[in-house]
Image (cartoon, one colour):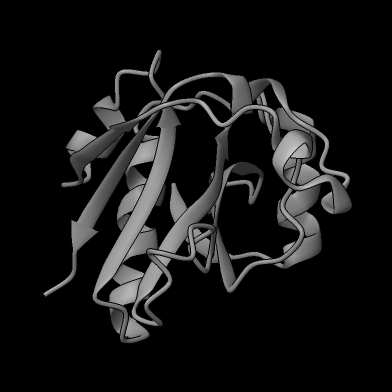
Amino acid sequence: MKLKPISFKKACEFVNTIHRHHKAPQGHKFSISLVNENEEVLGVVMVGRPLSRYLDTGYTSEVIRLATDGTPNACSMLYGAAWRASKAMGYTKIVTYILETEPGISLIAAGWVKEADLKAQTQWGKYRPAKNRVESVAQAINKQRWSVEIK
């Protein structure tokens, strides 16, 4: 297996085909794919600005999507690649969110640490009716925030 750059369009197609509970994001900073010896995509990681305005310091990146076909070690390889690429671009921290029902084994293997347990974000329309937000299944589930401080 090896890491390769992948276009936003192709990364979105992979996420829309594979990801269990999210569609592809609206945008990103960069994407990395993991391919096999036949150049078939096994997984992708998409990195962008933090969605939380409180974390958007200009020096923090966020893994906004990670999807794999289930290949062993693919997730940890992609998480590691995302933080190394972020470090090379000058970021000092990278964050991501997983569902509370997910164990985070790949994140631990890649050197990430759990930073916070977060309550589900529900009823967006009640507080921000002009946005016409569509809630996803994942919004109604508690999350964990994981991070790596880049030195």
